[in-house]
Image (tube, rainbow, N blue to C red; front, side, top):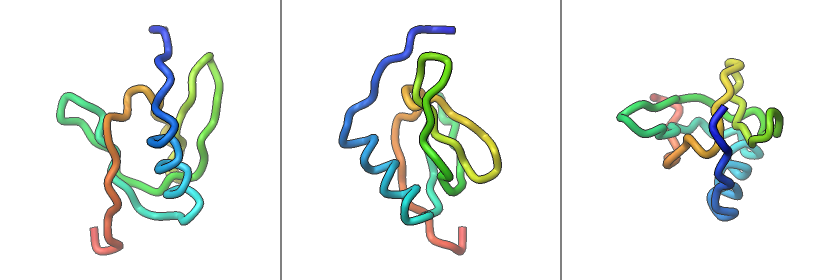
Length: 74
């Protein structure tokens, strides 16, 4: 596994707020890839921090380049 690069604390706070409020989000993962869902938890394992979505997907935080909130209609 490649070395983990810690993310900015303010960005972590945005992810944590979205998780707490159970907001539907779009995570931008670079290379035009994205993941939509609701964040269920922020976890640490395998020497990295991860965002866990309610559908079970886990994405390493240093692979997330941005976040936007989605409306329920999306």
